[in-house]
Length: 396
Picture 1 (cartoon, rainbow, N blue to C red):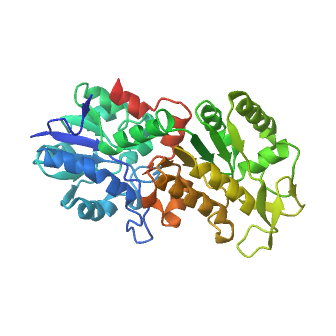
Picture 2 (picture 1 turned 180 degrees about the vertical axis):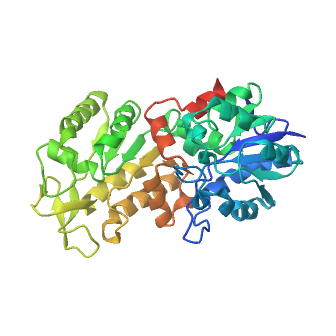
Picture 3 (picture 1 turned 45 degrees about the vertical axis):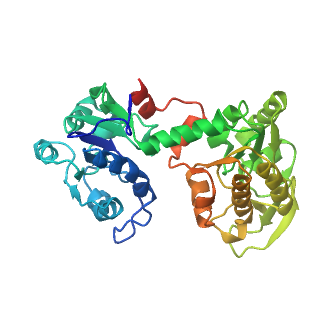
């Protein structure tokens, strides 16, 4: 496996799997170009070293072939602006016309293919489809961490047609290095903050984390399942009754492994799920009937802050309250501020998972932490200890 920095791209065409699954507004303008910006260094490296780049991506989840609202034509101008190069666009991704357009590409030029998922063969991991894509180029670069957990034609299968000319892009390589740094080689104590509403969706990660972390902070809706499991009253708070025993098992495993688990000691509770609801602070396990916990309380924030700010490495996945409603965002904001303080204190801090990334952006603190992951599902699967097909295809 080569590195993008070391590979000789002169006179070569590189087909690059990028993750340009970006949000569009009602006029089909890109409303957040974070993912496009993240891919720029890899594309520029290829061009500056004498190569040309053929970009391929998906956008949205088209179900029945081509649909105008999912066309990548809407993002061409945004890519061109970010790259400083006029990007060419073709209205398909395979076929004779596309092969001609690719063949005509000169060094320093960029070609964007149409949405891969207009073909069901992409998500099916179809080998013939992957082969057609491979015939457009001399080498393959995977820079799409956000889809590295999918065994799709463009993320995994295509790599087999480039046995000696396949590599990670700078973004994907950086993701893997940062996650490795956070989990395997980071400074201790290592603290993981796991938020979100459901134990069921995080149980694999929590179980994996118990073998790796010194401190585990559990917040968000998950906290109420743990509270009920230990005999607490949770009022109308969200709970997964099927996972009460699972929660007790986690607490037992943590004790056996010497991991400190921190659960909220108090909550901001409300009589309605809205910004205008009546609220009060309730001690954990003592939430009145008719009230639901929607944020961690002031005492919990102090305890969490103390743990986070004394950490050598911090991994944050998931909010600790319903931060989308400002009335219940103070807990998540406090976590964000504590992670920033830990970074200032010299810790390596990694934010991953869509909602925690949205939170750190909402509070304007994204540039004050060590690393923000671009992968949602891919990051979670990596933390669960799974092998990502898109990574494995490059390494093996």
